[in-house]
Length: 360
Ligand SMILES: [Zn+2]
Image 1: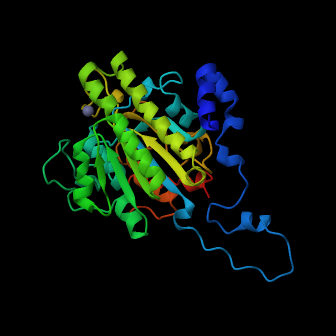
Image 2 (image 1 turned 180 degrees about the vertical axis):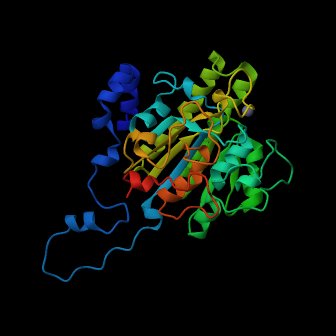
């Protein structure tokens, strides 16, 4: 059993109190590995491990592309964070117990449906054009549709810097990414079966050195519509999605290169109540989780650690004033993790710098 799996098992046995108590020693095996510099920073850590000689200083190692990091982004479709618990969702809970996160993030202000929010995640933009948004107002798989004016995205930004990205999704409408930015820059794998989707994503994660991997887990949303949010059926679907999160985390944990490089960002497009989530003014729909976990990321409450952001309570702030963290922060948070400037045109949470929380 890997250290991560052991920690999850411990959490299941002990509950939250036990999990909190053991957080330090169980925290990411990577933090206890030898302190070779992985951050691409000015080689202070590297020089301290070299023998001290009178020889001329060696040429500094070239900085690794993307700071030596990769992003694994996970969106759990229709994840109402009130359903999270150490028993039902041990793997997502594990991320919150070790990462920088909040269960009080916000969806896009304008819409609480799937496609506008996911296009927001990868472009870092609001929805409405007058808000500087991407303009995808629809939520269906429109034949041939592309994102209006094809703005920059985390896919194009990573590609321009020599990296690669990919999306795994349970819903065919995500092919809009590939149509908009091209199959080379933004390939999309559609697999409605959750376990087969997990197989494909895990295989790609371990076989291909992607810079940005986006995994969309559709099942909780499907079951929410069919049986109702927060019903036993919805909770089973959420547990299934959580098991896939666990498989992805285990794949990272089992591979030293991945363990050292991958930063996980998990969020959702919207929550839900009853059998719906379309009402953008309802707290159950616009309240979502957002958590970042990986080497160098401190375990803290995201709002407590981020003075540039403000916990919105139960309110629904628009895009003026101090912002809550939104799911559309994914683009700029990923760029920040990858040592890139913000995605051009991406105004969503552009001042939220993960690096200031200790990443570098
Ligand atoms: Zn839905």
